[in-house]
Image (cartoon, rainbow, N blue to C red; front, side):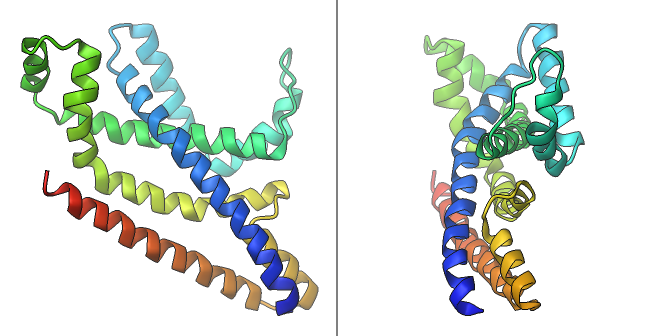
Length: 213
């Protein structure tokens, strides 16, 4: 069993970590942009962004994955068939960007309006004020909430096996079915636990560093 499980676990680990990193790299900046658009002077933009966030947060990530891969080809006019990894990347990034956007929006609202006025006094544009003065404070204020979402993301990567992708959960399922044993699931569970423990330590370390500023 282990001769089969270990190599498959190695391959599955690469896939799971890839999904995690791609989601994080693209959803965080997209979340900041979406949060900023929530403050747009255009009511149309505000409504579109609010609708996107409601859709992403109001439906299960699993359903979004299945729709993009299995359902999107049947959408009238568009009818585009995403590959497995395309569907996974799009679903995860859009889903987590919505959650991050709400976190960042709360952080932006917590900043005193005097900070914006200070930027204007210094001759900064609104964009410069946001990126140089507001955003650094927002990141510090919402770090704990962001860290919690990052931990959740690690666990959510286990959903990709539903599309037939060889991640950690797919490895456990394949070996478990072959040998009629639950041990592979326990082994993979221990790996997830180890990843989350390491990530939690790292996120806590960064949080403590930010307390000095």
